[in-house]
Length: 124
Image 1 (tube, one colour):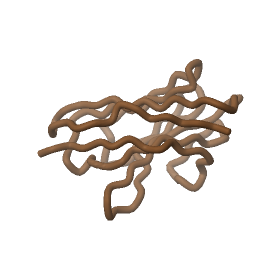
Image 2 (cartoon, helix red, strand yellow; image 1 turned 90 degrees about the vertical axis):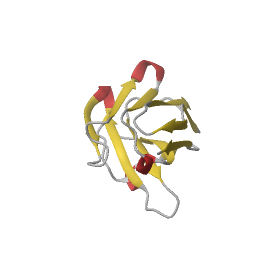
Image 3 (cartoon, helix red, strand yellow; image 1 turned 60 degrees about the vertical axis):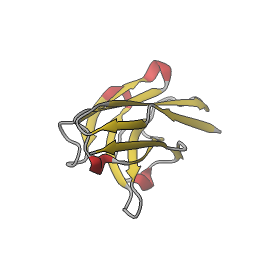
């Protein structure tokens, strides 16, 4: 079994920053990709950022490009999402996910394990 635990969410004013963390524990993966997906009330799930094994090939949704940065610490089985210049439209529950492949994609159906989510609220 795999556990993914997100942390770092909270309430921030527009223009502010937050850093989300996601620690994986349980099953030991030889190599894997990870990503962040968000869902706002009444909206479709949106893949925000993904990163391949070894911190390669980070990918971002157009809506966050230039503001968010995904990073990984494979030794700690942890990924991070640094979110800068936050906007009210970034308000959502953010989930981390693991794909049992070395190459990340931006398709949520390719990911096998999910965290419980952490709320990010950006006030105007």
